[in-house]
Length: 140
Image 1: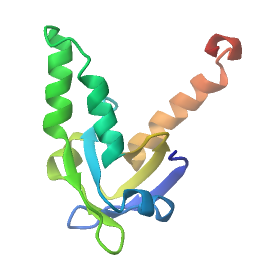
Image 2: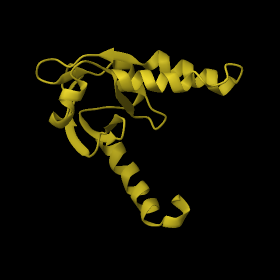
Image 3: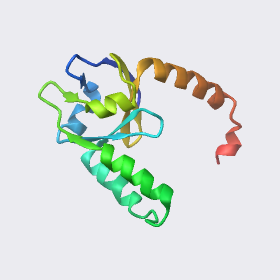
Image 4: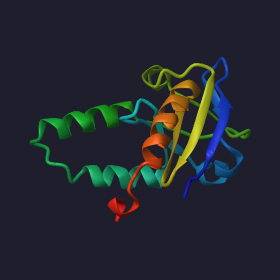
């Protein structure tokens, strides 16, 4: 399980250092994929394979399902961290998520999320307000 919020920076070559606590689990490879929240999802290879398996159950006749699969799979790219734990985020995904220099990397259960830091701060503020006002029994 990936947990926590981590502040990192993007270097001039489009690389970011993965949080130290996650490097071992991602050392054999990872997959970047576009998220619907305009951030980047980062899956361990096995996690990405599981996600694709789930998506294979979507009806191919459904226009929305086909569109989702196209964007998700066309935007996905495999990467392997270097010896320092750095990975290069593909330019197209950096553009998609409006990544500049300051990033937030969040643990999100079976994956990581990479956000532009300002975008994350704004999202988190709104999400925390909604979270604080949820009626707990509603969740169960």
